[in-house]
Image 1 (cartoon, rainbow, N blue to C red):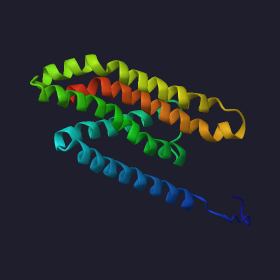
Image 2: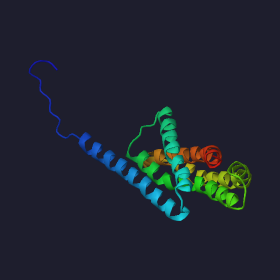
Image 3: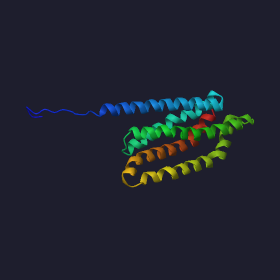
Image 4: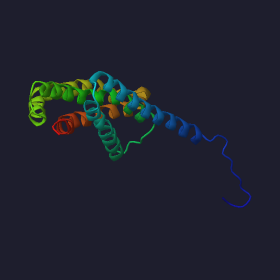
Length: 178
């Protein structure tokens, strides 16, 4: 600035934004922890719990990479969408692990159980993903100010679901076979 010119920042919104992002990140961590507890409570063993939980960071980080590559920012809207997507991400992996565990209980070795399971659950996992995409993708095309507000949310959920589907069809059975 030239000499004699002063400037002031009458309102610094960055503090509020940092606080909001911190709170959303805390909520994200809390959601992952609560999902871990619920999954363990219902599946009853740590191996069956850790496999679906391993898919959460892979899917969420994958979604953030895709969003960043697409030029979208990671903000409170995208973080909130990622929080909501956690349950959907775990759901795909639970379908796989439950079927593999059932087949192991029937006497199959883990490797064979994973192969048989994927023959049985691949179509339902893909169908579930397509249904979720049919719900969220149109939201990205809503016109007007509403569309602007919800576009990143819808794209984040849709991206996370596609990555979750790929992870459920690849990483989950690979971990189950070990």
